Length: 383
Image (cartoon, rainbow, N blue to C red; front, side):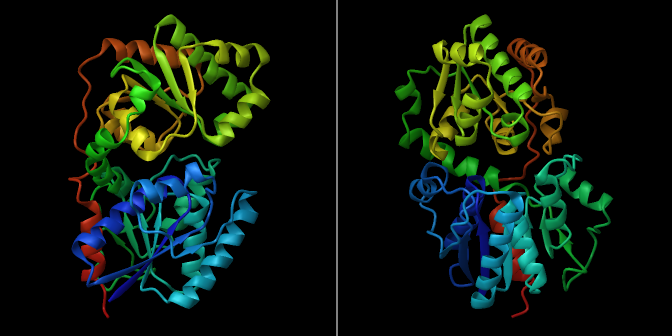
């Protein structure tokens, strides 16, 4: 029996981990034991706990309850807790996802205790080291034994950094393996899209018609914590909703809500709240978000995950950043990098409103990434 220790902390990781847990339950019950560690990086019930209930994900075996805090303090607490659990559980592999502080903490703790690391969503690069996530990605990749980039671009990024795709087993931290099996979030989009249609009535609750609203999300520190950028983004949303007579639905991340009150100009703040076409709503559940994405006319976001989900559901995407890890969606003309520039955002909306021939090529695998990852780990286990 192979033992996997899965590290999760932010809500996107909870969703990603559900694909692996589901594949274990369906195909590897007698071969793989999974132990789930929740760092508590996202501690708000709407941002975390409700996901386990709604998506029927196994409850964590451990919860470190770290909560928020400065990067160093938060990450240090996680490393301490994970290292202790590694000593108790003695897993064969530690699985980390993406690029959060939970990811980094898992990578450091496991690499220091010689536990092989499996990095899912490896190889992503924005080539902007001012982003904390970029540092987390690089460190995690360079301590991993098994790297699973979700696209060929991810593979190419790793090759540029000295990884070799032609290595032979046995695989170790000094002889790491790189496999492109697709994106486990594409697995989830296929699995949960039908469930969302049956289990949520979010459009009815908000009195929305399909294809008649824009879905927007804003949560990255670079946008929420800089007054000029936050004001520019909300100015663009305000103008867009009025000039195009379109509803803008904005599920508010707790940090965004706090920073709107603190940093938006008073005139803009009051105008946003007086605008009946700007729908400020609490954080949406995963199934609600899935439904909102599926039925939107267009998506505006600074979230890497939402960019990709827009592509899965064949929706044009305006990206509130100057770069993206998901370069494929831009290269195929399905998204535009607009940063926090109101004119760029409005021009992109006009462009997508007038364009029907957008390419949504299948670049994220076949929807079986989780099963393929587990098969590779089983095949390369020497117990």
